[in-house]
Length: 267
Image (cartoon, rainbow, N blue to C red; front, side):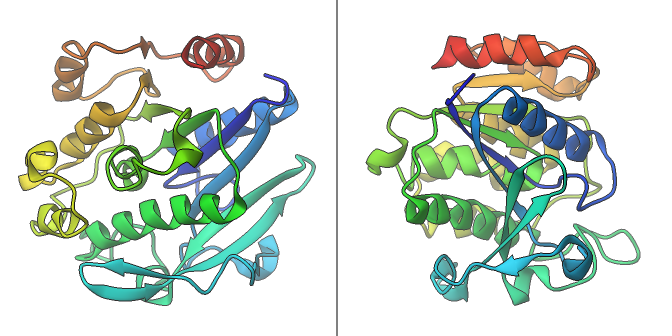
């Protein structure tokens, strides 16, 4: 993978957030590919419980300052960056005071989903892509982890479809069996429609469940990886009917060579 450009986009990643299957594999995959000589960029949300002082986050002024329109409202985009010690890896953080200042990730203290998680997901997707455009960095592979990043493939294939920077990029989505309780805001489909994305392509999001978000990611991906040993039955059934490469679950100890081969088959 030497000198191949890989963009990693994740809802959550160690060491900045607690360990989950998503956060651990997001870190391990990026770390291993970095060690193999790939040129990588890593993006995640800057959730408010991330300790900026301990992890030495700092704002990148030249990348910040853009406003993203979310459901007809201008929302300022702030970009921060930190380095992971000993790994020679930089991580870019998508930030906005309205969406990410609160000291929690996806739910409030009674484990109820935040009402604006739908807008946070749209903001994150558009924020990552706009920042990569500012970097003028054209990735060979774009690898998605986690449900809050699930709209990225859709926005790349629809909202940013005429952007030449991503013309040759291949989108790989890792799916995990880490569902949230309940649904996102029922207005999600209308907020995506506001961005001019065909409602027929997102009709499944009339019911914005965890599984349906994964299906939207699958639909716009070029290839799929099962990141959990057991997947939701509904997602397994959906995958059985897609005509695109699907990599079966690989253990944390043995995934490296298989992932490299899978990447190379897409490029």
